[in-house]
Length: 338
Image (cartoon, rainbow, N blue to C red; front, side):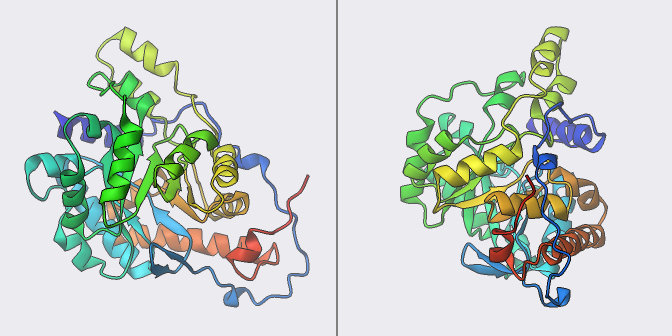
């Protein structure tokens, strides 16, 4: 059933039926154009460090999923492309693989062999910490792919409107804190499209989470996705009412950065291109994540993924050039209009 659900999610997102009514807020951010940048564009440095590894650009392939057979091809294409480009890779939920007692969906040692030098992030759902998963499963998730960090994804809205959803979220902050103490790798807290508020981000930081992925509203709406999967008109109506729910990505980035100035902040949620990436970085993101934006390429081939992110990198470089930013630190200080 879980594999079927993952395949349904993939089909709905690929068909464009997972869009809600929310906006990222990034359209309201505009850079002041610098007509005399005094830079050589090719010398602009987009590199940065993430999880102790040097990466070529501040871009992250965010978690995506699918049934085991499709996920294997997707993960292979993504890993090869990320290795070629020098970008980090966050895998989708490893719940199926853990419950199967072994590798599934391409989530095994082969992933690290394909991409030995990039940061790789493992992934578990927060809700599973209340259904029997704990430190042992978290260690297995990290170990099976040689991960540099573990994402705990937060999806209360999706669980609330999903027919099979896990609705008991009591005590999860304490369990997350326990994982942060017990694991040998950093914890990443990631929303899945409704956004992290500054207040929640601070609670997670205080619990030991050191990387915060805002995953704001404006991209895939998992309420809209679940409305497409609903088993009855009532379930569909409940889910559809929340298709526009969430904190816009631009607001979430600014809030989380203000609340957690020392955290590594990942800006994701409806990031369309390198211009959006530049805006997210200017608002306070250290890295920018994309999932649905690259999903179609990931289903096709490694080459399609490389082409997609090469385009985003080129766009980001032009944004730096036209704001007079020689590197990411300068981009964070670039002048905004208004």
